Image (cartoon, rainbow, N blue to C red; front, side, top):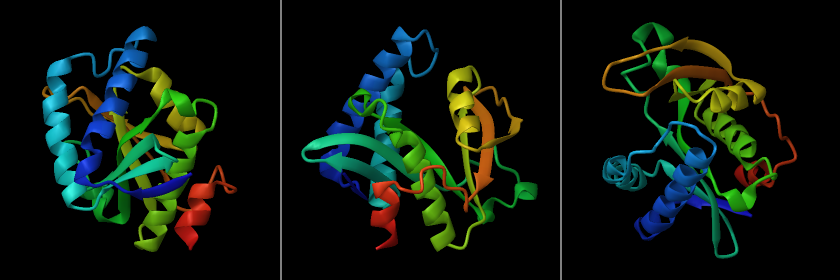
Length: 181
């Protein structure tokens, strides 16, 4: 299993991961990403993030198992008083159902912490859907603290969490070993 920067030829694989996640969320009764009309804007954002070198993929053989984007701070949520320059921001963290049980999401959060430390940042931050309590619980279980919830009218996300960049819940992760080399 390796982590590598995504490139434009990966866009279809990224969208496949998202569609799989949409289906799983729907089956789980979680109201997130249910509107297929949001796919085009998500795809456009991925293209921008890929071009900027912010999107990464976990690959095992030919299979794409996960993706993560290290995004700029989302100014709909993070205020100047949060010192947004002191953090790496996780976005579009998606794992394939084929990776279920491997704790790949948690390993990617540790990897993001490693990247934050390399960049001299103290925090790993993220936002997730306000209605996705299961995802919020996952992040809390991975050491994130709830900072606050924002609710701009034009957004469904807004549960804000952060943890120290030095936290590593999965220190034996192959992703961390790759990142250290």
